[in-house]
Structures are given as C-alpha cells and as structure tokens.
Amino acid sequence: MSKQNKIIAVANQKGGVGKTTTTVNLAVGLSMLKKKVLLIDLDPQGNATMACGVDARTLEVSACELLLQECEAVDAVIATNAVDLIGSNTNLTAAELALMEYEDPQMMLAAQLEELALNYDFILIDCPPSLSILTVNALAAADSVLIPMQCEYYALEGLTSLLDTIDRIKQTVNSGLEIEGLLRTMFDGRNNLANDVASQISEHFGTKVFSTVVPRNVKVAEAPSFGQSALEYDHLSRGAVAYKGLASELLRRNNV
Ligand code: ADP
Ligand code: MG
Image 1 (tube, rainbow, N blue to C red):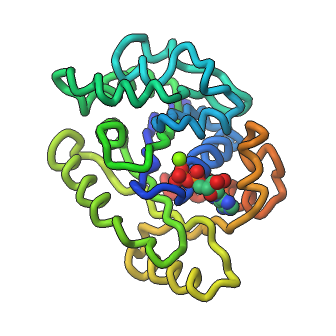
Image 2 (image 1 turned 135 degrees about the vertical axis):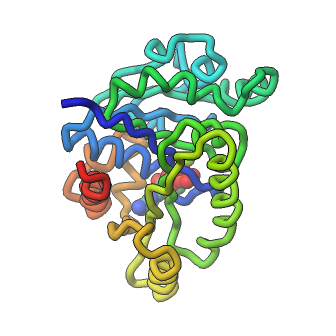
C-alpha cells in the first residue's frame, strides 16, 4: 500500500496551549494505528525531543542542520520507541538567524521534506510559540495545520493573526495549505467557562473543530518527564484515551 505522505504542522503562536503534547501523543497514536510517522521538533526548546526520550543536548544532527541544508534529510532522522524523530535544541535559535542569509528562507524545510515525505504516512511538525520564520517554514512545507486551543477565556485571542498568516502562505508559497482542524485541549468539564469556550469554538468554526476534546489530565503532564507519550506512560488514562480517539478521528476525516 502506498504511503499517505501527509505533512501536518501543529501551530498556534500562543505558548502553553498543548502543541507539543498534541504533536507527541498524536504521533504515537497514529503509529499505534500502524501508520509510519515522523515527528519534527521545530521548537528550540526541544520539548518534543525530550518527550520522545531523546536528550536534546546531545543531538548530533537536528532540525538546525536540516533547515540550513547542512545534512541530507534522511540523516537527521532518529528512530525512537514509537516514531521517527528529527530533534531540536537551542541550536535552532541560531539557525533561525542564519536562515535569513539564504535566498529562499521560507522554503528550506519544504525543500528537505520533498523526498523524505515519501517514506511516511504522516509527518507532524511541532512549531514554536511564535509566527517566526520557523513556523513559516512549517506552514510552507505542510499540507495542513492543526491548531490546538486551550479552553480558556483568551483562547480566540491571537487566532486572527494565525489565520492571517495561513492565508498569506496560501496566497504566496503554498496554495494547497488547509486547516486540518482545531483541537480543544486541557478541557476541564467542571469549569463553566471552559464549557462556554468549548462550545463557542465549535459554534464559530463548525466542522473545522475536532469532535475529540482532550481533557486536562495529570498523566498527560507527567509523561514527558519519563521521556514518553501519555499513550505509553498510562494508556488507560483519560488523556491517552482522548489522544487515541484523536488519531482515529484524524484518519476518519482523511478517509484513511
Ligand atoms: P505548547 O507546546 O503549546 O507550549 P505544551 O504541550 O508544552 O504546550 O503544554 C503546556 C503545559 O501543559 C505542559 O506542561 C504540558 O505538560 C501541560 N499539558 C498539556 N496538555 C495537557 C493536558 N491535556 N492535561 C494536563 N496537562 C497538559
Ligand atoms: Mg511546545
């Protein structure tokens, strides 16, 4: 069977909304459903790298060399327990500056993934909390964007700038870019405000919103300190069950 080759950027310029958590757990969820998955950590904080059980400080080849075309894409790939990984660390901050010396700084990742994508069903890119050139590289390379949103009062604030950026990328370098979906994360059903915001998001964005809602769950927060996804750390936890549901929903929505 041929591979899906779908590239999904997980983006939201707000920090702490669940981008990294979603990228890692969705990646592992898809891989448990027999999909071949590559996770690319595009945040200099290296949180997704650490959550995959890889020490970000000791990376020999990382997203930095990948973006600066200092290595073959395939040589940046590390095999981890559940998924393949291209890791990142603080070197990526330097790469961000160095990129601007290149002729086509927005397209560096896209160029590197053209061939590599053929090896995978899904490539998930964990974006940094900004609309920097790193995020722009992810959006330029991606087929779609998955937007995690925390169910809190300011959830919708700032979304306009992300949607504007997506539109700009569509009009310039990547006309095929789509919204994969908005994901409600860290949901606390006992909180009235969270309920209000969750329904607001769904009314506002309709079918673009995943019906899976990720609950606030301590196992999800604990897992990365063991270098694991929640699905590996405690597969029966409510968080893990939600992310398994998200993986199935994503496949269903893509008619896979
Ligand atoms: P981002 O990548 O958008 O900055 P993270 O995925 O790192 O966000 O999440 C921010 C913090 O919230 C982390 O400490 C993470 O462990 C925690 N967190 C994320 N999702 C959940 C959840 N569903 N339940 C509990 N804690 C969560
Ligand atoms: Mg993050």
